[in-house]
Image 1 (spheres, helix red, strand yellow):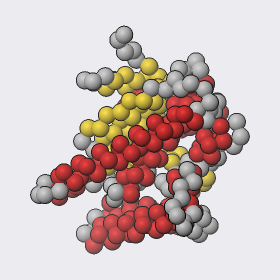
Image 2: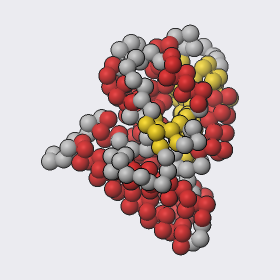
Image 3: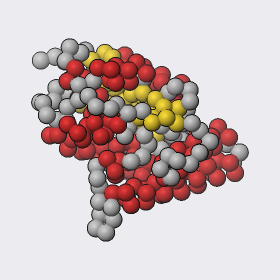
Length: 270
């Protein structure tokens, strides 16, 4: 049966400084760079697939993605007449976007992206997607920093009409996922996936691992900031200044001023 245009929540992202990464990898690190990017995408995809069984109802979401150069397109379809279907698509998209962001940052490849929704079509040869266009424009025009922002209309639709599947885990994920800056832009929490999933290692609690991951990412962001300032690259320096600030804010349990104003936005009980 021929595919039809459908409704979907779409995630678009690209990698900061990818042009420089490609130029540097031209010498002898091309395979290593390619392996890192593919590995992060594959890990995020596996996490998404592992989340499916947690849904209380049979999932109606179709997951599709394409990676071209440093641009990622990930689509999560839903039935616009079914609030459960939309809730599943939204929850899946948030989980995938946060996972991809975290995995890329772990590999020292910070991304910038956006989530939006609308009509969407893709096959082996083409993408025809209003949702992707909206996400792309948000990413290029408003994201500014290494973060994943959310279409305000999508956020309002989800918060005001979301029927949650997946029980307490989904609610825990969503309540940990959203921040708002002083300009009114909603964006995804860039850290904390270890706590959400309760990841542990022998001798280490999820909180200990969470702080360890944060410290590693802070050190990376500080290193990039110092490099950009030394090169007098003020535009990119501001991006890493922001990343250092928000990660440090999280490290100190959101209790220490960081130079930017962030508000935690919870979904509450639905």
